[in-house]
Amino acid sequence: AFYKATRQYVWRRVEIRLPRTWLALVEEITGGEETVDEEAANLVEQSLNEAATYVYAATSPTKELDRDALFQLRSVIRARLEKNAVDLPPEVLTPPDSRNASPIRPRNQSLEDRNSRHKSKSPGRWRVIRAVSRATRDVVESVRPELYVPMPQDARPGRHILHLDFNHFRTIGLRRSVGEGVNSRFVTGERLHLALKEMPNLVTFGATEYMDGALTFSVLTELLFRGRPMSNQRRQPSRGRNPSPEESEAGPQDWHRRKDSQALEALDLCGCVISLSLGRCPRLTSESVKNILINGQCTYDLEHLSLFGDVTCPFPFEEDDVETILLEAPCITHGRLTYLDLSSHPITSSHLAACPPQPMLRSFGLSFITNLELSSIADFLLKKASNVEIITLVSTSLQLAPTAPIRQSTLAVHSTLIQQLCTLPFTLRTDPETLKRQQAATKLRVIELSPHILSALGTGAGSWRVVRSKGARGWYVDSGCGWTAESGDVGVDGVEKALFKRGLLSEHPLRKGLEALAESGGNVSTAVGWHARKMEVLHGDGLLGREDGLYGAMSFAFAG
Image (cartoon, rainbow, N blue to C red):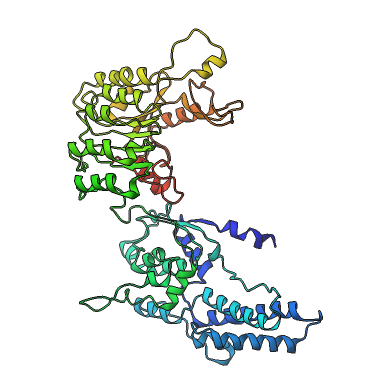
């Protein structure tokens, strides 16, 4: 009983890390790739036995077992099943003892034969159990409508899975030859499609480029058309050519099954498809982006906006359009943005001076803007965006350019940014209450800089340390600053909550953790970093989310 009660929580979240783990999962939730008629027929017989036992126990006036009555009740349910289950093939409804067994597919069977076998003779456990449940319910309602009888349940755990991702999946290091990598793949489209059909309650799915090209047409159809009415799933017929096998694959059973499944809430195709974000999209035009940000209703309430570009792929904005967007885009004028990346845009000091205040902005990207002065950035943070905690300034301003003297660059970082924006006011009082109330002019605590400047900063100054990612990115971080929740911390509303603090003591856990990251020299997890370049999808945290594995590498490690 305890196992049955906790099973749904054990299987709720599934992360695939190893190839053998994936094969074991497919075996567990589908019964293996060799789907044969005997398995479905045995499931019919098992479900009929369970249903007849439930109904007999609930309707029998005595507790003694009458096998003849039980067999007769089972025959009544089977007759109702054969009459109403039009979507089940006849060979599945035939008892295994009364017919010859279907041969198991040999290992050397061709892919076309295997696909045709799955399409024609695999009714799916969900259809079998649903048909038996309906037949049982009809029989019970015809005898005693007020009686509740528990319906048969699928013994396999696929219906409990809500989250499936391949973020940590790798095939590197398996010592496979090139031929094995091509002909003996692990995550194939057929296996993934079979597994997805056994997960009717799946709501989040994450894929990666290491999945051996398993995102086939049938897999994408299975993911995107879940929970939709049948009328919305039907595709327009092909015009001017014959339909492909993939286009003719879906039948009424597939539409019914997908209609009964949960609609997908989050789909992450990291490294698998492009043009899902506006960052690094070279085919976008300045006019099109301006129109959608100013006139598109879907962008009115944006909280995270990434228009990232770099020297290899600059964003195609024109200077006039930048000013128009800053002054007229609702997502900017409303001041509700918490993440904004304008890297590589032709932004000038006048643009920052004209930009509306951004009181909720926490992470700000301004990299690869050569003509933007550091003093203008500091003035903007001080007067209009004092809550910014993270800013990226890679190759921004002539003071931080690769051609500038390295001593001038390091002095500019400390004198223009850190001393003006991050330094606590001087006081002679040392009591804890005074120190606790002290705040700097802004909340700036992380500055992303070019690798050559970080190398020149060395071990840092004061509480500031250099933290490097697992890739090419790096940040100058105030290790004595951050959000902490301690006993007695009360916000302005009188409720205990985490507070933003500077001047943390050297033995504070947060400061010790940040200094440990600085000492690691880049030998860190892919989850270490700030100002993500990839949107976190599966949990809905967006560009302020934190991920590890391959997703974390895309967010924090890769420089582009």
